[in-house]
Length: 130
Picture 1 (cartoon, rainbow, N blue to C red):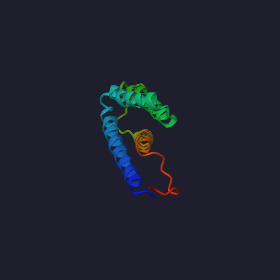
Picture 2 (spheres, one colour; picture 1 turned 30 degrees about the horizontal axis):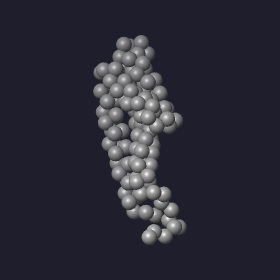
Picture 3 (tube, one colour; picture 1 turned 180 degrees about the vertical axis):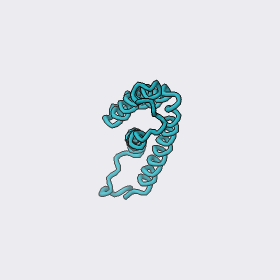
Picture 4 (cartoon, one colour; picture 1 turned 90 degrees about the vertical axis):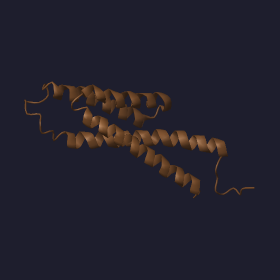
């Protein structure tokens, strides 16, 4: 296994994790301001527009579905009036963060790996280097 490629995978994962945590902070803030959920939805939509990967489309769709849900909770349409204890967020937030992490990881991996391989040429471990 080529060491620079392993280091690149670790770098991609760390960047994805940092991005997903920023999205998690936005998700928490979207309880008070539900329109903040449109920021990650727009971000994921832009990533999908660039890469056309299905996992990124799923992430964008998840954030777009979360936006009206959270808005309905804020307006007390989707809850019976006792919306202070939000047990539903124990499922929604991890799901949003996992799909966002997968989408960002997929996007970064595709972009950085293709960029590195195009710069270095095809990497075949069976072919001797000169």
